[in-house]
Image 1: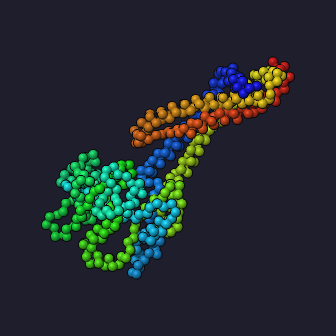
Image 2: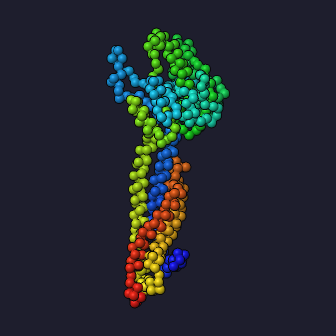
Image 3: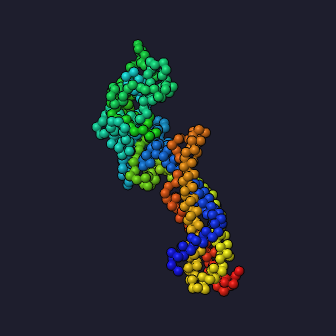
Length: 452
């Protein structure tokens, strides 16, 4: 028999008992839908977690800290504890690690800025200007820092919320001010004054205290929205920031300033950022950094731990769906065995007229595979419908009950999952029909013909 004849006969035989075939296909539909939807829930959770992690920072960036576990060994001549720092020599050593693209120290402090009638307490970060592009910082206005910048500053997207008008009674405290209030100043156009003196509000006229030293700085860029790590920070050349900080400290404590200048032969840093060329190399570089005696943390490490948890959860959810598919597979086997009993005489006639055993085996395997494939195709369609329902009605319901973000998705069905669902359903049908097909080939032709 030609293969197309076998397929046509198998398709025709499926509709001999329409009700039984429909019920069997329904079982496959339910099983396929269950396993796809269960896996899609896990994929959606994993995708949502990755998006949140990416907003907190670049996945290819490692944050380096001093090793605080060795604080007992950090003593000076007076047996006083010395806060551990990251030395420039250690940063140079990290820069030599394979797959490291850029290394920059981070120095973060708080300053007070004055822009026209507005004041603001700003968290300002000093870093190497050339590292901004390597760390994937992007501007919505202006430009990034470049080598040679001194008093230039790049502001985070939401920095305006840090400023308030001290003379406005409604915004005496910036954390109580209305974040939707339009503040009429421009970081890139207006003059900006900065001081390391953090006394609240306006200066007190007639005060006998030393006037805080003001530094004129220039805004050159505003970062893009979307990164929580940079939204409320400003960035400046680290060398200039340390220079201004030291100058301010000496002006306020002239006696200690000279001693500090003589004593501090090398600047130590509390934090550094390391950019790795590819995310797959992040964990390896991170381990090499830890081998130098420093602490290192990356989003990739958290993501790997989350992926392990998600894999377990997806396995559980997939297993729940697989149970339904297993029940459906038993239904296919039952349907095909019943078909053998009903078509015993037909099988005997096929053998008598010269049908080969492999053609009879193919006939039953094709029938069971068709049941699985048809059920899989319909199941994928139903899965997409349920997924759409969850992402519209379900998200809307959860947004009101638990504050879920409106653009989040509860279910994501990638193309590979849909194709895998159809292929797996057809495979289940094929496996389920193997024993019935084998049973059909072993029937005696004479016995089958005499069967009423």
